[in-house]
Length: 326
Image 1: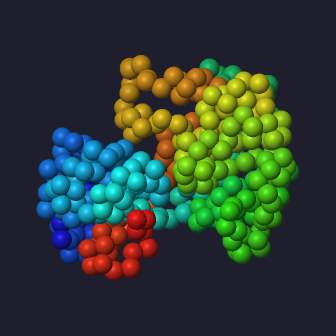
Image 2: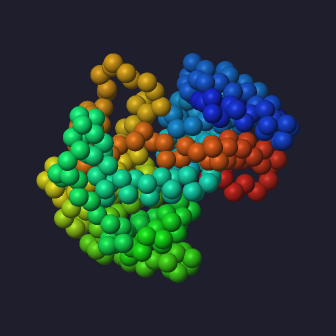
């Protein structure tokens, strides 16, 4: 079985020899992103593996024409793939799961950095300003933390937070019994109203698009702290920026932003960035931005690659596939 692996990074390629032998498959990696120009690389592959580059209808049609019937994205999110077009064409789509500790640990780190004003402190260190002015932070045990989305990552974040002694609130359309043991499920409006710090762990669905907006921000506490390690499209960027500038949002830590495709995972040194909102956000001393790397651990990368391969094998065998979406 041949699987073409698009956008294969060096850290992913390091595992390919191991998985070729383990799963007895022919893995064909390429550094290139999926595009109309390199569709032919997928010839002979019923299944391909991709990352987060956009997969639009025209590209799906081209893949179908060369024999592709299954696309596995090496990510939890799959909003970069046109699912409606895939359904019409008869192409099946799958995602992957990976160690939830990668994003969960990073999320807690981002929380701590936000409440202790680490971005501001480090920027002052570079000019040798070691005074205490403006550096007084908060202690986690005094805070009410609201976790929106209690899937595998959200649950792990909550578990991590139990050691800090903070009050934990949770919201999800599908409550989880294990979460009830450590947190209180409340309506979204109540979570927004009561939380000192809110962290987002939902998928990028049509229903969740811009769920953090002018209206929902107005329901939050003054000076609320916002953390997002999920998807940039959950936050309406302009409304968020207005809230930071007015002081409604006291601090934020964002590993993801809207329209990040083409920005992250590339070296733009010396160039004008084609993302004005990102440049403005970078200027805020109380908004910490990192380039969508919460997932990036040795275990998670290994999981992403292997589970994508396993998903393709299961599809080929017409076996039950926990990762298949359509």
